[in-house]
Image (cartoon, rainbow, N blue to C red; front, top):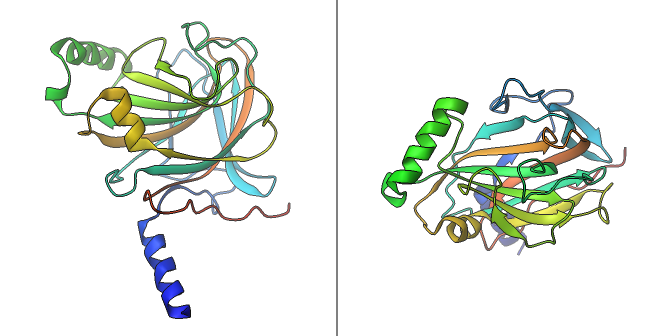
Length: 244
């Protein structure tokens, strides 16, 4: 019996793809994570690794600022489509509104970029992407999902980004009832991406986290920890919180 349980545990660990565990990096973050700025005129959100209420996490502090903390992905979503993570916010933003460009800010968001086959996109879409990349660089993806902690819209809201329909926003938390504490998430990224972009032929290329307040000029502080992919039949693998 014991050997069987051990074998099952090893098999489960083999399926787990850890993409954001920061346990050994207090004070900073290590490659392949890097800060990405789309507009050099906008101040960058600040990131550092801290121990926060028993969780080693990335702290994001935005003050009228925006930048992603991002890393490349090489995850097979056919086998491990479930993304698990912990996050928290100090407080929701006050004036943000994802339906408008001037309100397109979030206290916390988890971002995934995708590569799609060219034949799944119209000529007009490919032309728009080419123009966007000529302005903002190669970091502009074919498509992207944003899981957000919003201030206004109900949990479950799905809508295009105010700037581009190539990015879809999904509200997982809203408002302040759970602010100030760690909460866990479990999302089927493949199912969400297929529903958003009407194709199963996509490849996840980048994962990012952010606090984003450049449009509203507000201040936000949020945390992110224990990001990992698992199979659909597998539980998330969160380490226990320690006592600071």
